[in-house]
Image (cartoon, rainbow over all chains, first blue to last red; front, side, top):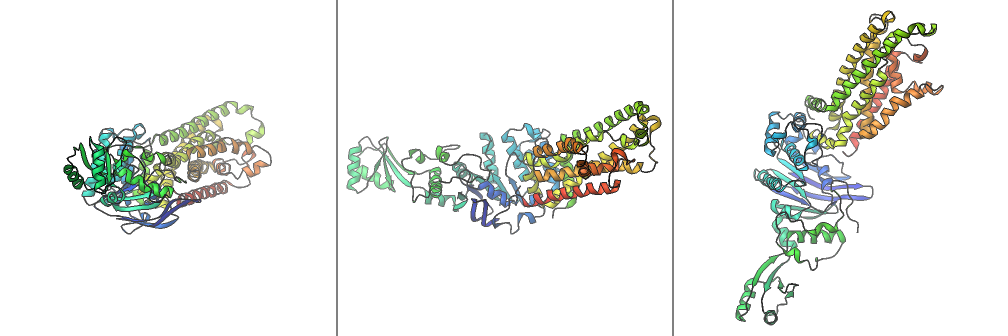
Length: 339
Length: 257
C-alpha cells in the first residue's frame, strides 16, 4: 500500500507535481498514466525519497521510504534502465544491491533466471541493449521479493516478446496479492495490464478510478449503421426522431443509440443493413479527451472528427494522440505544456 | 537504519567490481615507485655535482617519494570516480533506493575508498622508500634514522587523505568531468606553480597537498621549509579533508538525487 498525501514538487515557479493525493492498493495492477512531462517520474522519485517533495507526504505501508530498514524487502522499483554502472557485470550489479539489503547472494542467480539474463550474467552491462537494461532493472526490483513493485515505463525499449513477458509478470505479481504500480504514457499498454487507473496531467490528479469506470465515464458509445440505401434509412430514423451523423465513408453514427431498436426499425422498413454495430470510443480517445481538457483548459472538449479514435484499441498501436504534447523524455523534471 | 556491515560490504563489492579501481590504484603505485626510483638513481649519479648547500640539505627520504607528484594524479582519478561515476551512470538513484539513509551510504563509501587507499598508499610508500634508498648508494637514509619512519608512514597517510579529499570534492560537484577538470589541474599545475611564485607561495603552503606533503620529508629546510612542522602540516590537510567530506555530505543529504 502506497499513500500519497498532497504531494507537491516545484522547480522554481514551475509546478511539476501539484497536490497529488491517491492510494495504490495491493492485489491489482495500478496504472499511472499521463502525457510526457506530466510529472510521473518525479512522483515516483519522490515515492522513493530520491527527490524531496516541496510539500506533502508519501507513506509506504505507513512509513517514509527513508525509514524503511532494508527497503528492497518492502518495495522494488525500476526507475530508469540506465541507472546502472556500465562497467559492472549484471551479476555484480545485483550482488552489491543484494548485499546492502542483506539479501542472500543465491537470490541474484534466481532473479537473473526470472528475467532471462542468466546467459549474460558475467557480461558488463555497458554492452546491453535498452531491453536488456530494462530486464536487469526489473531483476533489481525483484531482488528482495517485495510486496510492492514500481515500474516506470517498463515496456520502453522492449521487443514484442519482452512486452508480452512484462505484462504477464505484472499480472502474476498482482495476482500473488502484491501492490503493482506501473507508469506509462501509452493508454493502450495500460488497457492490457492495469485494473486501476491513476491519471495525471500537468502534475494534477485527473482521475483515480477503476479501468472499467474510466472507460464508461470518459468514452462515448454509439451505434454504427451501414446500408446501401442511406436515404430511406435517414427517413426511417427521422420518423423515429433519431438524428444520425453521417461520416465520411457513408456510414451513420447514432450517438447513444440502442442497436436492438435500430435493427427493429430497419426490419420494419425492410431495409438492408450491411453493418449494425455498437461502438465504444477507444481508451486512447478517452485519455486524450481527459488530458486535453486539463492541459488546454477547454470545457467539455470533444476531439472532433477523429474517426481513428473509434477503432478498438489494438495491441501495440501507437496512434498520434500524444503528438500535441511537449516532447522529450518524461524523466526530466519537465514543466509540461504551458499553453 | 540499514546494517552498517551490509552497506560496507555492498560498497566493497561496488569498488572491486569496476576496472577503474584496479587501473587507477595500480597506476598510482607504479608511477610513484618508478619515478621515485628514476630520480633516486639520477641523484646518486649526479650527487658530486651538487653545491655544498645542496649536499647539506639533501633529503634522501623525501627524494625517494619524488614520484608522488605524478602518481597522485592517478589517486585523484580514483577518488573522483569512486563517487562521481555513480552520478554519471545514474547508479546513484539505484544506490540510494537500496540505502535511503544517505549518511550510511556516503560514509560507507568513504570508508571503503579510504581503507583501500590506505593499503595502496602504505605499500607504495614503503616500496618506494626501500627501492629509492637502494638506488641512492652511499647517500641513503635508514628506516631507523630520526624522522624517517614517520615520513614513510606519513606518505601512505598523505595518499589516503588525498583520495578522501577528492571523494568529498567530487561529491559536491556530482560529475566526473567537473571533478577531474578542477582537481587534476589544481594538483598538477596550479598548486606547484603557485608554490614557486614568491609571496604567493606562503599562501600556497596551506593548500591541502602542499601542507600534507610536509610529512613526507625529513629535512625541512630550503625548498621544504614551512612555517609548520610535519604533523601540523598533516593536520592542515586533514582539516581540508574534513571540510570537503562534510561539504559532500551536506550536498548529498539535501539535493535531489
